[in-house]
Length: 170
Image (spheres, helix red, strand yellow):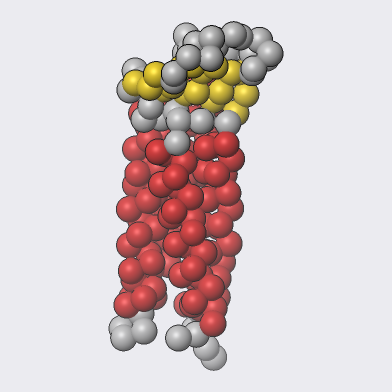
């Protein structure tokens, strides 16, 4: 296997894991500790609240349409990243698979970028109380959003490596 192909496949795989971890973790938006006696963690698939240091209670949140679109785009990106990894591994036997791997990687990158653009529009929901693209001072972006941002960066870098692998040799 070509070294660039190994690097590209590894980075796509790590980006895939980061995207999955960001969805499963409810720490997309969290309340600041000094402002509230309770702590809120708001994610795309779960919402957790700790009131006055008691046990944390998690439930499924009612998502705004913007956050539903964000979730759909991230799931599509995860599917495309998984397909990209499989196609890069398959490309050892079939050279045509490199073209499709690059295509799926590009689609994953577009889906993740769209999710990153659409997500902040939903900051107006009652739990947050902000405006689109503007968080209030009482909440901040959590670690899941940072992990998701790292997944975007890794996908872009992986796509650059995959593009280098797929270029024709003259």
